Image (tube, rainbow over all chains, first blue to last red; front, side, top):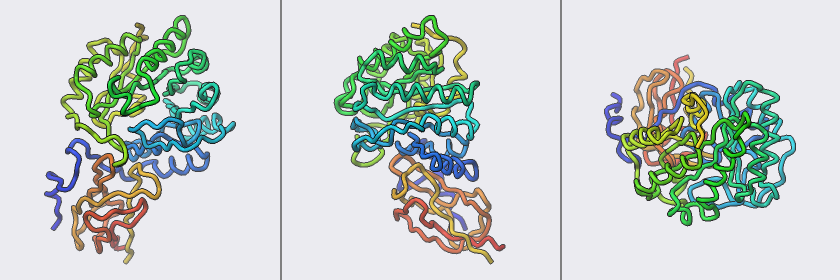
Length: 304
Length: 82
């Protein structure tokens, strides 16, 4: 006799029932893993211990993480190690393009670690990666999720001039929690990065949209989330993602609250009413989760 | 008779990381189809239901409830009858 009746009432799980996923059978996961290993590419999926990894890899997709596997910042929500950075790989832009082509991606998302040790923060490497993907996959949508480049407008412009369709930079949390969650970042600076990308795009083809995201469940209030959404709209941000914060280990910032699916639905409706062209909100929503489908919500350019 | 090891699948953890067995949906002797849920695992970020990759009879639960298992570690053995 099976114990399937137990499935309705999981016993020892510290997570609420909506933070439960089924591991896919079959799919492309092995092929994705092998390709990433062959081309020596990092993904944020793996680096951040993303709970969506089994699902996304099985679908044959991944979010590339360039500029190395270690980060010069020590945000307390993130699993990517903050060991000393290594040299950039000159062949990395080509390897990302090769992987995207062999996976047959129509929507390519590229993010990175933060490289405060580099004079341009890695902006030039981002631009080369965007151009390599464009050359290899001219029809693909290219989305970049960039660090704040310490607010340097020239570096934002270097990335934007390479012509990504979507320029994403996450604010991650509400300003009050920055010292505890991302101590080396600055909320206003992040908003300025988004605003500057949009200013650069004016009169050009691309970036077509700016995008940002935040985690909830870190101890923020509803009014604080509302204020962040308003600030993002004020910076002209067209696409927003809202997901549950999950601690990668007991050494990271603990989860303050598990936000219920109904509350995410309410945030989605509220963000739409505020004028975002596309919104994704839900317990397992991450910045690049189903990024292709989120982009399909956009019907036209959104400006400030 | 062919007995297959069912291993802990890729749950997003790094090699060398562990996931914890929450509980088994099946007992030794149960017949399962490919895709039937075998057990529930916990990582630091979520609860995962792990389906059987094969059809057959569960012959042994190798990992106990509450036990931590390394990525790639054996969870149970299933006789596929081949």
